[in-house]
Image 1 (cartoon, rainbow over the protein chains, first blue to last red):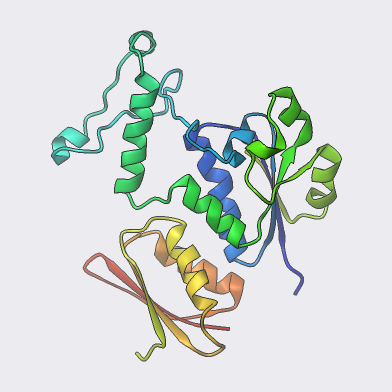
Image 2 (cartoon, rainbow over the protein chains, first blue to last red):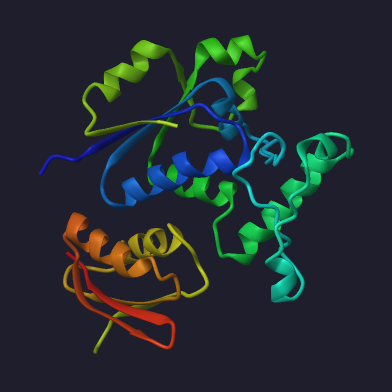
Length: 169
Length: 75
């Protein structure tokens, strides 16, 4: 049986949106798929050596509940529905939300992005960074993890055109 | 049931139980059996799907007191 192929385009650079490409890529690899992920625009954040820039923001995101990852059950159940206008005015609000999210992630036995990325690399998932956006955002190749390839849209289609599953995230 | 290796995936959430199981299966030889313990309720469907797609055989899948036990025979 020929190996199935999964092609993913990762375009988002926040902590929450870092999960779908890495969860799907690592799982597909475990199922025997050959996987390539093409990182472009803000998705480039996900393949930087330093992932500390990955943040999550409840600002402008009405779908995100704000719950506390500590305290008694009744306290954890409260959704801190703070209006955007107020969130915007509190210095460090995003950093606070990010650290609470990281705690929630750890509490729930969910892998960190570092771990999922490492598992993808161990499973020989191929990472390609979009050269055009690398230049556009002023990155250099040394900002990215080892083993990256750099290419453009045509490089993506070389693999995606043969893929069984193709996702834009 | 007899098994050759066991994996404690309790407390881990999707997709870690599957990824750890795949990694551990790599250490086994054809016909050997891996026992997996998990607490992720999604793992019941996931291990069945994993077995179907990879050809490793899911021998049994059971639940007791919020813990799931799987026996998988390596292809």
